[in-house]
Amino acid sequence: MPPLIDWEVCTLCGTCADRCPLDVIYLEDDEVVVKFPDECWHCGACRQDCPVEAISIEFPMIMLRV
Amino acid sequence: MNYGQEYRIDSDVAIIGGGTAGLNAAMAVAQKGLSVLVAEKANIYRSGAMGGGIDHFMAYLETGEGWDTRETYLKYVGRVAHGAANLQIHEHVFCEELRDTIERIERIGVSLRNTSTGDFYRTQAMGQPGPYFINFNGKLLKPKMAEEVHRLGCQVLDRLQVTNLLLHDSEMAGFTGFNIRTGDFYVVRAKAIIISTGNTNRMFKTQTGNPFNLWYCPACTGDLHRQAFDAGASMANMEYVRMSIVPKGFSAPGFNAFFGMGGKLINSLGDAFMKNYHSMADRAPRNYVVWGAIQELKEGRGPIYMDCRHLDQKELEHLFSTLGYDKDTLPDFLMKKGYHLSGGLIEMNVSEPMQARPSELCGSGIKIDRNCSSNIPGLFAAGDSADQMGCLHMCTAGGFAAGKHAADYAARINQFKHLDEESIAREKERVFRPLQIKKGTPYWEFEDIVRQITTDHFGPVKTENSLNSALDKLYRLDNDKHYLKAENLHNLMRVHEAMNIQDVAKITANAALARKESRFHPYHYRADYPETDNENFCGLIVVKKRSDGKPETTFEQLYYES
Image 1 (spheres, each protein chain N blue to C red):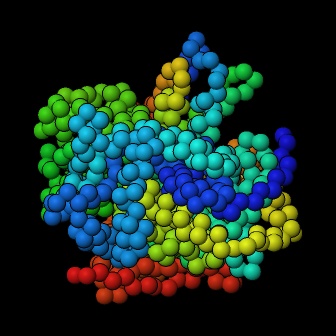
Image 2 (tube, one colour):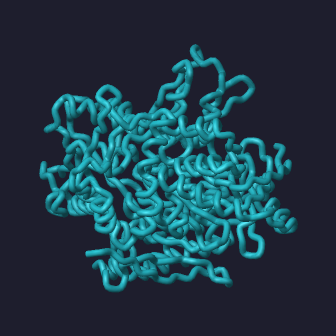
Image 3 (tube, chains in turn red, purple):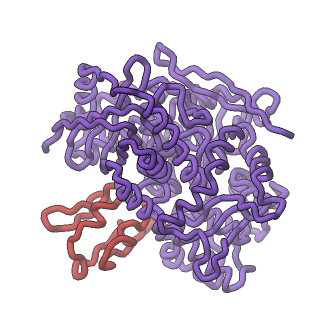
């Protein structure tokens, strides 16, 4: 279910929504929406490019437990 | 939902796919002073196979060592990519460009060297005669290339899904596409077109069941393999089903980093088994390592582990940083699974198969000549979507070469070609139709069926019977395409991707039928022809669409000095 956005820190700049290569993240009505979480490739582009380090990556349970 | 607003653009050269090869091609065209358009399904800052980062660049550097020369390197290519790499093309699109390419990468702001010592950190894996892999921090390589492309004034259309190529009198004339966020429809005319859209992923089942948990980029779905094939382009090296060794649970890259640093695979009995499969053991070419791992798992000696316990602290630190350069989130994953720097055993797995090149030293897809041109006038290919390019070193060098050749071609054409308005209208209707279908099949259900068929019948073991069965089932799916539905523009993109994956699967199965031998085991393992037959099959299976729409295959011999 990655990525995870820290709403306290996020400034709604939209960089993550702009850069996500899998079209997973959207900026909608002044809110960052992780719209297609199952389609995340875990490339980390959103986390790397976030100017305020508001993004962390969460791995689905199956990836960690198998 | 609004969609269908139409835009028309003319550009001397158009590049479809703004990954590594596409952006290097754009730089070359811009430097020749022609107008260039890059059409990219994601965003060029982070799109493509290495958008999130990369840690290795293959090169010989002429340092005076016997192995570090063009001649030894080409011998290595001929040995490791035997029957798939065309050495004349390889020399022309890679070797001739290598020196400038290294300079270009460093000029745009990414150092291939250790910044404190100024030296290259080189490691050896994959059957190399010496340490050809330069380890470097490439986390910003893609954004830096994107900045350079913008600085050069190239026009970029991000979030554009290209849907079909347009021909005029059998020559390339343009293409159509739609913006996956706005629904705008684009008609582009170009004097030359370069395809650089990577290989085909999401075609086989994955280790955790999620089709996006992939070693290679899940956005590369063979869109332009399918479109080029339909336009009449010859394709080669399409029969190979590529795999790697990945961490259990996460299909992430890391093969070069682990084996380059001296990591060894061991089985559950503690045996470093690769010595039983190849004289170079864990430093063997990738396909041998995958083959060895498959045998160990199949014969009950699994699970398998990456053993790095013999590395010292400094080497382990280097390894963990390069793993993160190649896949930003891999160190997080390993930590969350409980592994740490003191060097425990990391459980590994064989990755999902994919339609792609059988070696780092060739490609798979549109068949190119030494000028990166396809058999269709005005259509060029570069990077993983060309049959003779792949991997960062060739995508940067060969992408630039393709840009130069396409620019030279476009400069000789006086005017843009006429487009047939009726076929554009038909295409527009086809593209948006899934948005009007209410009671239909979602893309993922269709795609799951394709993956089940491919995995059952050629993922990776295949025979004439299994391939014919796969083809029968894949062709039967053609009719179901008319009932695919999309409730939004994002899923409209996915519907088109799913159809392309199915079509490329048919091309792959047809090519695999024609290669009545095994090569690069297990990438092309025919259980009915388990041996490599260099007398009859040292070369390319070329697939092309006949006038009746069916694929036909021919064989083209490749020659190597012994």
